[in-house]
Image (cartoon, rainbow over all chains, first blue to last red):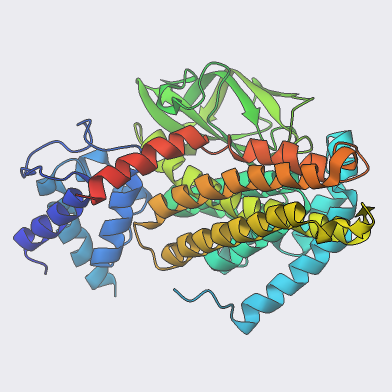
Length: 87
Length: 378
């Protein structure tokens, strides 16, 4: 299992590639903020898929899974754990 | 980045190049005048597996990689930008279903799309909504087991002949996406004619009047219609259009080289004039640069790299602008001949202009690219 804090740190680094000099808080709303452009949603999905070797699919498409660092971290943990079991 | 093609990729491309040269390029001007692409051609291309290029084999497709798909887009764009447009929007629907479709949606539609039994079309733009696409005015309201769709869509490529439409509408005030088969009650299409370019792309206006769409036809969830569903579709669309723009520029270049070989002015062939050579040199270098940007985007796509999205926007922006420049020069080189229907370069120029507008205008790409530039450069 990937430690939760490691996921947050890695995702935070990715977010800072898009928004510099911003310290993202664990419960800070990402999607509902005006920080990101229209391409960001898919960039985030692709990043999570590549970084954690998971597949984000239809049943995962709940915006609450992606709206905060805490939610993303929990989603990746759960998803990576499911995918490991399936393999 | 390795831009060399494998033997398999090369073989596929040789086949498609020959097919385009045989059944597309010689008649593309006629299609342009008649504003249609014959059904038999669509069927012939289906037999070659064209409509299922990006669809998995277990769904009846070819499952080719994105680099190969891009190169095929270049070949199609070299022959007919209108055909490229049909191929692009069809692929956008397939790409969305592969990424965000439910199991049932995939099983229902992907095999039909792969075989070309049904063509797909993507319907985001409306009479009053273009670049500001999040604010589409078409509505979807849940009523029992169906969503009832109302609204109008415009400039929908393939809209006259598609059997399946991916419609973006507001549901509970949030962008959402729905699969709408052509035979849905209350759904109608009206052909759009007399366009500047893409004249045989069979554009249509769509009218949705109390269209009942089963709940299961929603793709993704409420609120993801623009961010994820249209995001996936438009990224694929930009990629195909970028490559198609390279093909169009290549066609301009080839036509210009051939023309300057055979036409004499001032006692020498045009190719001997240095001002002509300047234009040819710019065509060659601009088109090579555009192709490399497309290769880079394709390489990132095949690697699943999130940077693919921005690099695709860069490729689309550059390649479509280059297509316009190259087409302008091609017409210039051809002189009055280039302005007539006797040569294809006038079609190339009209089609090139459309490349700068569809799947996100150049100005939208500039905003995205500049914003990205400010983020990554301190």
